[in-house]
Image 1 (cartoon, helix red, strand yellow):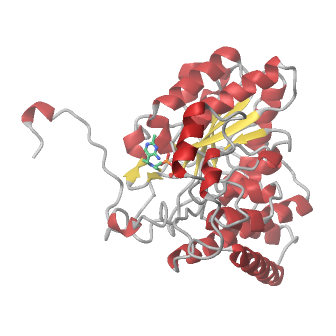
Image 2: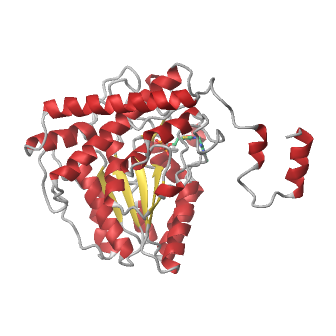
Image 3: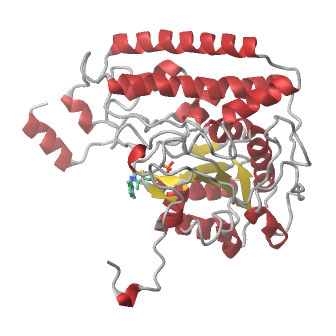
Length: 410
Ligand SMILES: Cc1ncc(C[n+]2csc(CCOP(=O)(O)OP(=O)(O)O)c2C)c(N)n1
């Protein structure tokens, strides 16, 4: 029972509980094409409407509308669709491998594929990425070999992290992809620091970082926002609002009080809220913010409004805290289906081509998986030697570590 003295406290409650019928009829969603595209160097004060509306290009019939339409070549759209499908098929295969005990842990990005893939495509290859654990589509879009990704997840002899990291905490220096950290939010400040350094050195590359809406409740979010705003750091600060932080709905991070994009207003930076399941809108907003950053306009906070359609991780059971069909009735649909529908609508794709593409990708993922498995899984294959735990951190090993290594006799 809530004590009398606490009767005025607000304790957020999710829209629906397990067993209830999910409905989103009262969600305030702008129509596709309703919001204009402002000049990239606009004064942040003129941009308040973009923090509270939702920038959308694709309507639910797959038609593109309005000034934000990036008018991409159909081949670019097909590449985006292929990369999103690859991400989804890869995720499913990796999750199955965890279920049969071949790796320890996995996190899928189902429903959020447009965020990573469209944003990777809108950025330059030299731009530095500081992701969370749910943007594997960035790697796929930048062309990382699926075999290397799998080797990492299986912690086998081909793992570039040498088994020292949790699966999905990728690192890929050659692809300008910063090591993912299990400590939520650290990447926000790191991205800002990297962006300040890039600008200080007179380089053109910008940084882009991603956190979940739950992570905006950490101090790192606010530290990063302050430094980015004060120094006009060339950085894209992406908040992926997928409605859930494990079992906590977005209201616990303050999402019912104000939109996450509107956090930018208090810092004097643009805050743009975008339909995260709309490939075209995500691409266009990312291009806008990247151009602004490259032109000296500083950071942009982007809220990607989406829905985590699957469990948080392989250790989570969402049926305990939300209705099973919430993802199915999410009013902004599924990003893969929406881009597919658009391509079909403009005569650049078909059900037959889609089925064929899925079969090709599935066969590629299977082939890569067999190669990865041959190098070892959680329970098979060679382990890195114990002595390797003393390597790769210090150029010259400090005395205390040298003594520890001697004590271990390795
Ligand atoms: C500093 C810190 N606090 C808590 C955790 C445990 N934790 C891991 S994921 C997670 C939820 C994060 O939710 P959100 O930021 O919304 O991202 P999402 O998983 O939805 O993509 C929590 C609380 C952690 N890893 N690090």
